[in-house]
Length: 107
Image 1: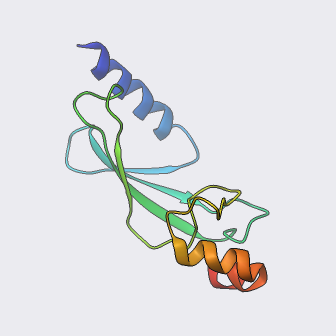
Image 2 (image 1 turned 180 degrees about the horizontal axis):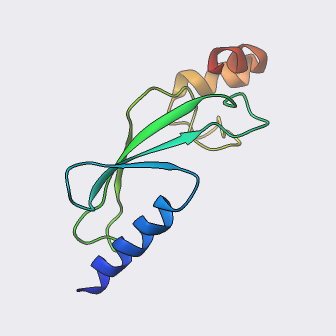
């Protein structure tokens, strides 16, 4: 077994033993879903999100492909949003303009 394969197995096993819900796609170890809960003490508390992860053959030397299955309203997917460097310009603008309205939209 090559080193990238061992790393993939080790990382996947750690993820499966964590508090996250992991659901394999097909029978391989390269594609799976991960479900996670919104952090406590954040407007996302109580929410659940599911991401699809695809590990390339060259993982960990090549980054995984990750995408949300369900929508999330956030400027750049950090617990502490950085609205000055957004991936979602609309969310960033609302956060900077009206934090209460942003938090209400998140909930």
